[in-house]
Amino acid sequence: MAPNNYIEFINDLTSLVKNKFISMDHIDDAVTRILRIKFTMSLFENPLADYNMVNEVGSQAHGEIAREAVRESLVLLKNEKTTDDPMLPLPKMSSKVLVAGSHADNLGYQCGGWTIGWQGFSGKSLILLSCH
Image (cartoon, rainbow, N blue to C red; front, side):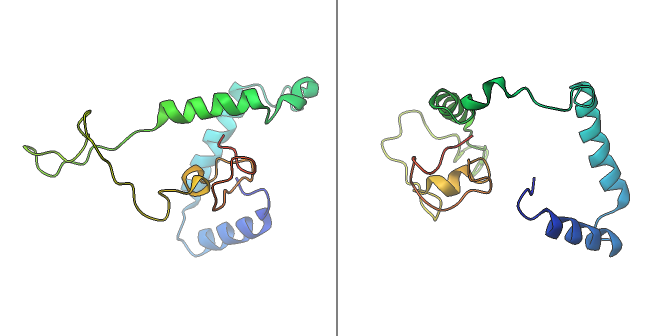
């Protein structure tokens, strides 16, 4: 998932393997899992995409589906202060919740790499940024 700097990625990964920071077994395992999925999806039998619906990519309907998926998949992790007095999950009737930090009011940071701009960026603009 490094479309814009794949040469740098390949060089870095090669160096990490040569210097024994990442094992070849780990690389083999990752490649095996990727190829298994591609074979399961028949991507080698039908390697070219069907372009009939290419104009739908990034459409308003797709954006609405993506936003719905984000709303339905947001999860707070369980983080108990003590077993008798848990911090999370928050009570359903909480009157106020403070969301703080550099990501609190920054849609770009919250979406991360799941944006049209691929790797995400800082900002709030819904026109320039769409979570996918």
